[in-house]
Amino acid sequence: MPTCKILLFLLLALCTSCGECDVTYGQVGGEVIMDCEVPQNTDVEWKLNDTLIIKINGRRGTKQKGSSHIKDKVSVNGGSLKVPRLETRDSGVYSCNSGKRTYTLHVASVFAKPGPVLLQSSDAELHCDIGENPNTEVEWQRPSNDKKKDKKVIKLNSVTSNDDGQWTCLFKDLKLTLTLAVVGLQTRAVKVPEGENITLPCSLPRSVSQRVVGGKWTADHIPTVSFPTLNTETKGLHWSGNDSSKVTFTSDRLNINYDVMLTNAQPSDEGKYVCTVEFEGGVKLTAETNLTVVSKSSVNTGGQRPTEKKGKTSAGGVTWKKEVFGLQLWIWIAVGASSVVLIVLIIVTVLVRQRNKRMKKRVKKLRSMRQPLTAKDYCRCRAESEVELVQQERPLPVPRQQRNPRTRTAGPNHTIEKRREQDY
Image 1 (tube, rainbow, N blue to C red):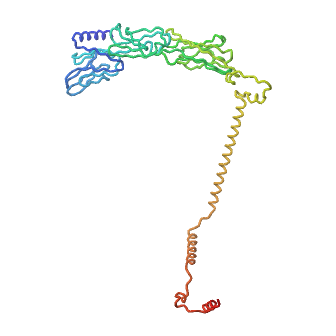
Image 2: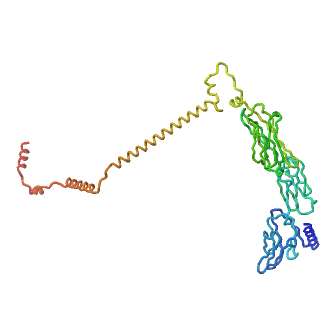
Image 3: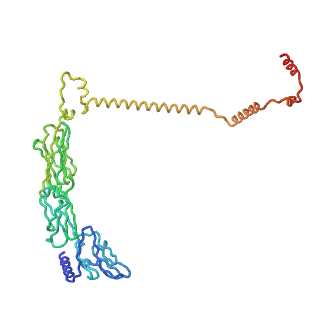
């Protein structure tokens, strides 16, 4: 490593003295383009710290990769070298065609130690690494937009919520940003009915860089109750202690949640509970939560004391409000009545369905008992009906004498009719 630094400084001195060295800056994750400025169809050879990156034959267009660590990600267009996805190790002296064109690249980065997520009251360092003299001043912009000249490394002592937000390192044309998150233990006040179980909350909003080395719960008003402690031995961070009948806890591995459960809450348990978590580096965070135990009578009346009525109390009202297995009697009666109605509806539905099935079977059976007409019967009935129709429609034959009225002769009936007309 010292040999590489010496070589880098020698190349810097050489290119500076020749006046052909350009200094350029890039950001981690970004890209840079460096131009060799050669005519077309000219051989191009790029090196990083005197190690071959790539060599291109101008006439044939063939490429030959070298042994540099960036050989697989670079690309060459004409004489220009493009280096994407920059890393800090990409910094160095880039030379084209044996030093005819030289660039000194500084890949800048900004980061926080021990990490971007910090605990309240902990110390931190912000680094703006631009690859030059560590004493070079840069301009830091705080989350409150205040700007001030400072060194590339600044120290933050006992960080607070005011340090939470985006920090920016400004240097020449570079604008490097870093977001800090200052976190602390989170909890809240809890309320529980008498005799019920309640979880005492304690957690971090997100994971932090500092490792947890210990912690515990305490309650000064109930010194006889045994609380677990945080332990990092054997299976990582976990609760250690006796799982008593008053306080229970999980046996799984912990990360950012440090809750415990208080069972069978009584009025004597009401008060302040303190959660403490210790981190490496001596940072200790605490969170306080207040527990309120509400009597059952207050819960039933919405938190108000029941008022006593003058005179006799209805015995029926007391009976309806009597609790059975944690619920009032009228609730159980309503559930029972609903269940009976539902059962009756199911029975009626089943009976109706069975009746419909029987009716369908009966109709099907009656249809199957009918004897359908054969082809012979059908033809005979049709022939007889046609004969009857023909006989009914054909008129009676008229006697030959009556066909023409001019040729009809008067018979005896004609003489009688004529005499009758004369009598009238």
